[in-house]
Image (spheres, rainbow, N blue to C red):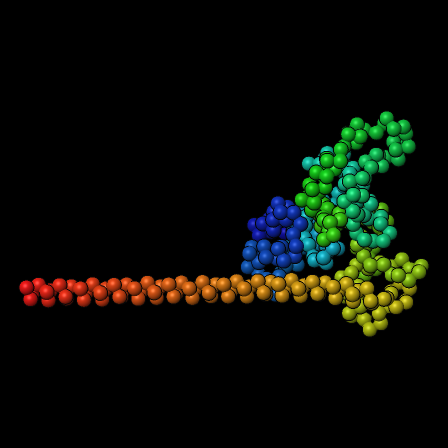
Length: 318
């Protein structure tokens, strides 16, 4: 059994206390703790993760990495690998909040268009009674728990904010509700058990993915996987049906994103240039003011000396 050092414990504690971290954040912590850069010491980085997971496996936890399906960035987090009645008690959410969350997850994951999100309006209108067991949902209305009936719209809205804060959900640029990185890390087995179609390239759940537009083909691929796949292959065809994959949509979206990034970069550069010019003008103004003060002080000093010489001369003449 490998004995973990304080460095291992620090990495585990950082992920547990801060929640899932982006790759750059986690690697910066790793560098600060070990003094090694994961980019140049990949084997050492992987060795640390392997040693940590060997120890965490005894308590049914795992340090796991996955890609955020909304921006393609790699994230790290510590997840529970066992879903039992005891582990379900370790939550700050109430039963109606958990049922509300499950309803949102199902609505997003079972979307045949693989958009990876639903509108805030649709999220707030999730019916909690649909999360009851099948035998309970088929019974009469009065068997719905009062806590479900009394779960108001304002409570749903507050729960949405809490789930986004805790990274179980996220808000997209368009203001829709998507899956947070914690859900993508923790719910891997749930996606498989509920037959959520997987990405053809990485085999992870294709919650937000591009669909093959050819009729009868069910292939879905994450956008970042698709870009890597098409950049490495000469034949731009679907791996499922063998027909050409339309590149127009990807090219257009990439162009839009690139244009937005360029505009933001130009605005940032212009802002920095304006700030630099303002700083130079301020420094020039301060330097001129200092020179004026110095000149005035020199003039005052010379005037005082001249006045003293005149006074002495006058006194001598008298």
